[in-house]
Amino acid sequence: MLRRLVLSALLIAGAAGHAAELPEPVAKLMQSSGIPPEAAGIIVMRGDTTLISHNPTQSMQPASTMKLFTAMTALEQLGPVFRGRTEFRSGADVVNGVLQGDLILRGGADADLNEDALSHMLQALRNQGIRKIKGDILIDRQLFQPSRPDAGQPPFDEYPWAYYNVIPNAALINTNLLKVEMRSTADKLSLVMMPELDKVSIRSEMKLNDAPCAAWENGWRSPDYTRKGDRIEVILHGSFPKDCIKSTSINVLDSQDYLARLLLAEWRKQGGSLSGEIRDAMPPAADAAPAPTTRLLAEHVSRTLPEVLRDTNKQSDNTLARTVFLSLGSLETDPALGSRPLPPDANQASTAMRAETAIRAWLQQHSIDGNGLVIDNGSGLSRTERATPAQLAGVLQAGLKSLWMPEFMASLPIAATDGTMRRRLKDSPAAQRARLKTGSLTGVIAIAGYVMDANNRPCTVVAILNDPHVANGAGRAVLDALVDWIARTTQP
Image (tube, rainbow, N blue to C red; front, side, top):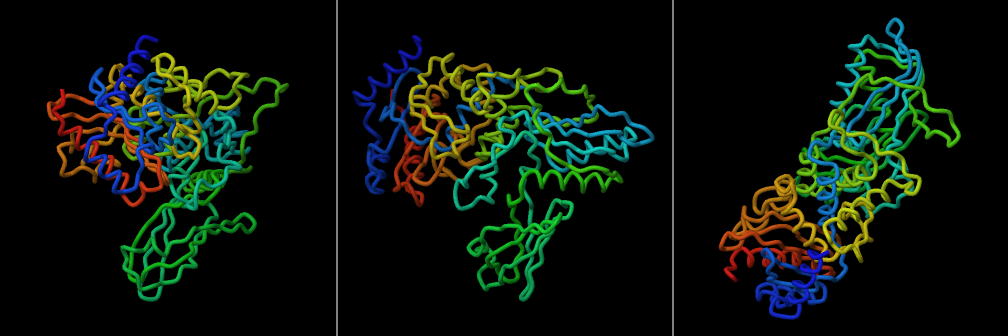
C-alpha cells in the first residue's frame, strides 16, 4: 500500500509541476502532426524521480504493451521452468501391434507444437509396436474453457487469414498456418502448400499481372476454401506478378480440420492405420462416472516460459501472448512435467476469467491500482482492452525488482537491434540502450520499457498515443523522439 501511495504521489506531483511539460522535440512533433496533448499519456521515471508525467492516470488503448501484464504475471506465477505440454494417452491395451481402443491427444497449451513434434510423438507410438489404432483419435482441448475460444468470434479486422489473428486453443498446432509458395513465369503460376494435409489441396484463381515482384501483396485478396465430401480445396484470390517467387502463411482452415488432417497424414507416412475417425473429445457430463484411467504413451513439451516470452514480446506475437494468458487461468508449474492443470473452479468457468483474476491478484500484490484496467485476451489485439500509463509504469517498476528481472528484460525488443525495434532509433544514442515493448493498432501507438540516459542511469518509460493522426509513422516519430530525448538527457 505504501509503495502505491509513493508512486501515486510522485505522479501527481509531477503532473502539477515541471514534469508535466513535454520535451520540446516531442511537443513540436505532436503539434505538427495534429496530435492533441490530451491524446497522449506519458510517464518517464528514474528511480523515484518523475521526469515526465503527462496524463498518467488516463485510461487508454495500450495495444501490444498490454502483453507486459501477461508476461510479468506469468513469470511470477508460473515461474521460469514452466512448459506447456502435449500428450498421447490411452486406456486400451496393445495386442499384436493394434491399440484396442481410442487414442487421446491431450492439448496442454504447448506453444511449440508443430508437425515435427507431432511426427516424433507418432514415431514414439511406432517404437512401442503400435501400427494400428482400432478406435478413434480424440482431440482433447478441454484445458481451456470454452475449448474453442475462436468459435463464433467475429473477425478482428479485414485480414482474418493473417497470422496475428490466430486465436489459440489448447491443442493448436503450427499456429494453424499453411505455408504457400508461389512461383510464376510469364504465363503460369505454380503453388506448393506445406505441410501436407490429408485430402487438402490448393488452387489459384489469381491473375498474373505486370507489377514488380516486390509489390506482390498489392494484388493479394483474402483466401478461402471449399469442402466437397471429405475433401477440402484452399483457393487463392487476387493477382500475382509475372516471373516472381514469394511465399506467405495463411490461417484459413478450421483448427479441427487442420490438426485432424495433419495427424492422419503423418500417421500414414509412418505406416500407421486408423480404423475409426478423428474427432473432438466431448466434455464429461456433470453426473458422469469418473473417466477411465489412461496411461501416457508419448509427450512433447514446449520451451521454458522465458524462451516463449522472448518470442512473445520481441515479435509481438499475439497468438503466443493469448496462449500464455490462458495458461494463467488453466495451468500451474510442475517441476517434473513442466505443467499440470489447475483444479477446477466452479466460480470461474471461463479460463479467460481465471487468467484475469490472476493478473489482478498480481497487481494487488505489487500495490498497483487496477481501477480502469480492462482485460480481454492479454495480448492487446483488442478494441476493448484499456490501461493507464501509471499501471504500465507500475508493472515495469515491479519488473526491475522481480527475481525474474533478467528474464523479463531479455524478452523486450532492443532498439536498433532486434524484434519490433530493430529498424528504429538506429542513429540515436538510444540504439542498443533501450529495451521497449511496442504496440500499434489503428489510431494507437505505444511503447513501454527501459532506456539508459546519458549518464548511464536506467529510466522507465511509458508513452501511449490514442488519436487518428498517429497514422503513417507520425505517432512513431513522436515516441522515437521521446526515447531519443531520454537517452540524451543529463537532467538530475
